[in-house]
Amino acid sequence: MVNIRTFKAVRPRHDLTEKVAALPYDVLSSEEAKELVKDNPYSFLHIDKAEIDLEEDIDIYDERVYKKAKENLDTFIEKSILDKDKKESLYIYEQKMNENKQTGLVACASIDDYIENKIKKHEFTREDKEIDRIKHVDTTNANTGPIFLTYPYKMEIIKVIEDYKKNNTTIFDFISDDGVAHIGWKIEEDEIIEKLINLFKNVDSLYIADGHHRAASAVKVGLNRRNANPHYTGNEEFNYFLAVLFPSNQLEIMDYNRVVKDLNGYKSEEFLKKISENFIVEEYMGDGSFKPREKHEFGMYLDTKWYILTAKENLIDEKNPLKGLDVSILQDYLLDPILGITDPRTCDRIDFIGGIRGLGELENRVDEGMRAAFSMYPTSINDLIDIADKGEVMPPKSTWFEPKLRSGLFIHELD
Image (cartoon, rainbow, N blue to C red; front, side, top):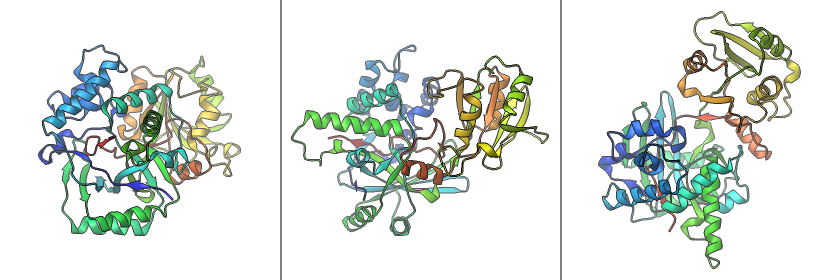
């Protein structure tokens, strides 16, 4: 049983919604964010990446960045760029990208469900990134970016949401610069709210699809506030965090590819020979880049050529979903033993490229100085759920979800 609840969302003024909505803070560099907002004073990046409004060389973890984020949020509210709803509500957030459509319920999730592992994780988090978001949440006194959660398909929940969409007007409807459609509805009716809350009590678990650092940070802020308020009742807003809940059958995971800076001292011929111990290596003779067509197949771009790497049968453990992941196979039998990349979370010799950027980006990175690139077959949502259910953790950068949830459409204040 999982617990969700309503909240009074802080939302963009209707005529400014498209200008406020912004990509998540963690998919953009400061330089990219600054470029995006140069003609847009309403962008939520002024709050989520407030360093863009400070001096050029400021450390993104400087205390002034968090104070600026709070100042900018307060200014947005004072100028009615953002307004707070007067009634506790649930919301619907739908995204359409190409042929894919995903429809999520915007609600507050319980930090206790997270602590009790009813909200399950599939990634480790990094302490520095957690501390960053803890400071941001605590200083702004708000969850400014939603956690992307998924749940196993439940027809009863989908029917309530779809019926509501058909019979009610939207609160926003726009297409962002990347071609993704964003559509929202507000659910104020008590009867429907109660029905949805009760239906989610029949859901055993929620799963973090994206936003592990934001979730962990929101929970730690909540726990810190409990410690500071020993007579807390559990109903305070800090006991909950902002989330969007999507049915798992609607989600699309894209490939999350790798590029490496060097071959760990190997020459190209030696490297190819070494990896052939565990992979069948073939030069790709087709046109363009090579995109893996099935599990356990990899592309490798080296010296302006693409190769097809196929994991040999003895590497594949179908009984162990974690070891059977392609990201695990590449890590365990190539990146670690051959290239010496033992911990890809901390190693500066590897970088990761989301599939939305295309395989041409892999070629560009190698042609511009990186040494080799690996294209991956996407991890499935069923793999994610299976591994999370077993209490295991995927290798870093195993999943890349598209489309990305926009920040600034819904904000949850902590008091």
